[in-house]
Length: 357
View 1: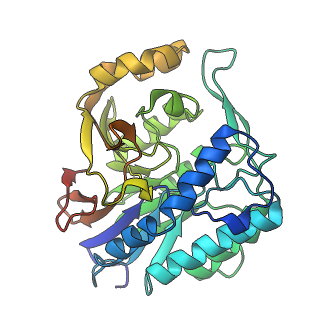
View 2: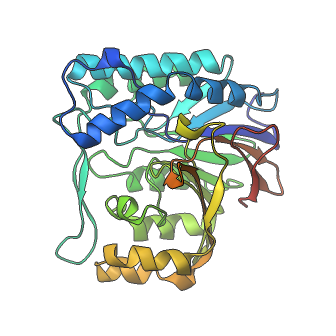
View 3: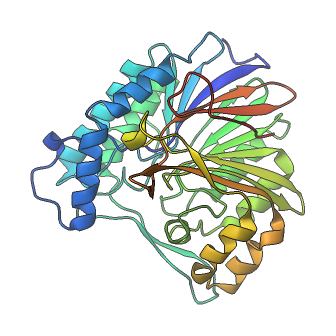
């Protein structure tokens, strides 16, 4: 495939949290880290590998790329060397799983998260809006992700960040790092300006733009330029591809300038072939009640009002009767007329098929 095909497929993966005992020397610093390690060690002891083999079986001649929505690695490395080794090995394993395809990741908060350097957001600034405050540790990123993407894309030099653009079948793909100082808005603006006549725009960002469960987790990471981003993307038939929440979400948002679709995927292997995806939220009005305590900023609350959501659906797995991470992947079927997402959760046939645009 040379990029001119008008119909093609994309394999889309969510969070993977690659991990293993050899990347940690010290004991976990707290109970959250302890639970995360135990979860990761268990799911990378066979379930996640099986899920990725199943995903690879869906590849065909029409599938040029595998897109991964960040948190490729767990992070929480004791130091830069161990964190760099974890990311390096995660990238190498992904290439082994999907030979002959470009494996295209973005950065997640866990990829930046050393034990002593965690990216975070403040909830609201003095204007009642969201404010980014800190960006984690980029030294392992500069050692691993940046040289990797330079080689994967055939670039002459290592890029300064993991913001990049690709084209396929008349569609514009914009991969962004929302954690770096200044965020991703200016890069998205330039990318849109340089390709004004694209058929559609796909934006790949670890952080979702629109609210999705769990409410507290999303509210902690509201993109600071959410209004400006929506203004830029709404006229361009935009589909957002994200991760982060560990649930699967399908959202269609009405903006005065157009409709934006968001697909959030989780590829946490914990429940792969163990529990099927189950619908838990069918509309934003139901979900908005759980979000209300976290939308304390008046501008955020007004922008994300329920009447703006044309659709808002959530799926997750259940472990021992309790809500748990979704496990699976999506195959995007892109044609001139539409984009469909086939969601697989371990069965031979898709568990869900969604029309994204």
